Length: 322
Image 1 (tube, one colour):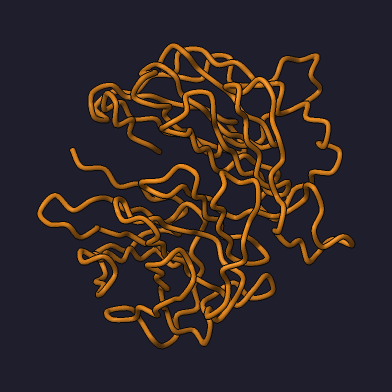
Image 2 (tube, rainbow, N blue to C red):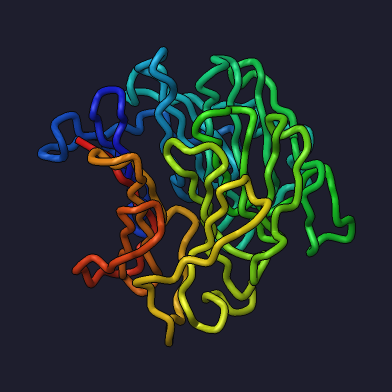
């Protein structure tokens, strides 16, 4: 689910093993919903099946009717009429490297979409398991950008494609700076994805799923390391969120208000959010867990508190000031 900040419309993706996949839209704050997935699927002659809708991403302010949607199996759709009709971005689906893409545990999906707010022709996507791709011509062509990113599970540890990006984000003030939490480390790019630097030093694990950017501080990011692919919970079962205020050059462990015993839970790739605080220069941060808890920080991560909620596993979390 995502709220379009340009007009307040809310999009919700429903994925059901029995009823299939559907995208719904509400234009009145959730009071009423209607279908918004006409064309969101593959033509019969494509020989492909829409397995799951993964991510809905509103475009820039300058294009108020353009919306992007990432799906499994490794495809991107676009709407230029506010979500009424969708078109497959076949240039990505039919990328020359696609034979080297493969599904991870969650499938083969476009889970991150990042339009460049300063360049109307540039957009980034992250695909698991394929890596980071960038288009400089509004989606007509795509370039894989994974130089410096490890793929320890591959015979070639630094392939052109085949990296398992878990989540990717863009700096709040500089669109050239990207960050990613990967299956095999944490990384930063200072040149719009052309090259990546390993910023894992100082963290207890190179493995994790979400990465959070501060809504207005350049260089401030947050990660939640986990033990690894074999046991997906935080190290020593003590919940810690790690913050860097210098682009990953050093890290600070944040634990105040977080459970330090028996934290045998997982944080999914979309189960975090941040927003600028309406009352101060601080940021409000949110983290949902696989055990159904939501933790919030109102002071940029210095301390945390659990919201009074007992939920199913939190797989996606969005924050929006309305």
